[in-house]
Amino acid sequence: MAIAAGGLVIGLATAATLAAWTDTEWVFGGNAAGDGPGVGTSAFEVEQNVTAPFDAAGFVQDEENPGSPLTFGLDALSLSPGDSVYAPVALRTVDGSVAGSIDLQSAVAADGITVTDADGVLFGALELRVAVNTTAVACDAAAFTPTSTIADGTLADAEGNAAQALNADSGNTQYYCFELTLPDAPTLPAGTTLDDLQGRTVAPAWEFAAESE
Image (cartoon, rainbow, N blue to C red; front, top):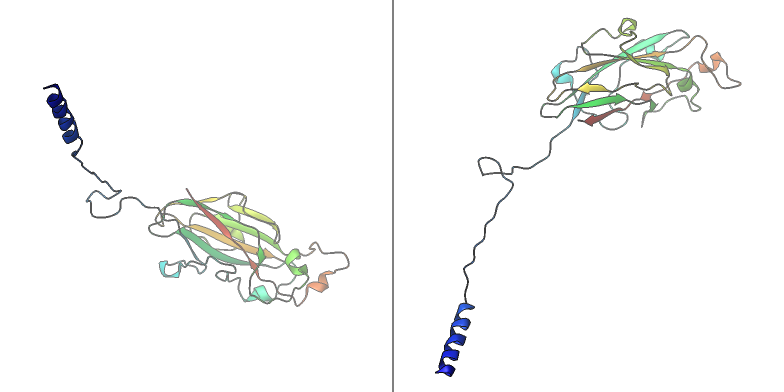
């Protein structure tokens, strides 16, 4: 009886380890309807328009140097000492973009554009001012006020002194006005005279560095 009982106990123990209930539950990062993904990234994209009056169809994206051409006008190719020329550009986020900010960088040479200023003397002689307004204004000398001017100095060195806010979904537009001036008495390298600037051309390019919030 002891042996049988023992055998019974062994038999029960063996039967108890042969099977067990199992179950599996899964979840996924989905949307409220349960029929699509529910996790993703936001989008941040800025667009520009270099042609006043900055209608919607004129906004484009140019993310590589040299970008879109600023039009300083026909007189920009025939500057004399004391002359200034002006060109506008407007920037905003695209529809579907999150908000961010944008900051003007100092000028560099435009890629792929042939100029006649091999030693950079004219590039170094020109002066730059940039103004920004939150509403469209005429891009001329009147656009520059103590509060609107964000860059003022030589073309080679002047850059934005503060970033401008860009609202999400094309919620606002920042309107920039660039002024280039050939001074009456520019700073020139030793041995160079004002007359040495005649017949030269330059093609400065500017980056607007944008960052999302």
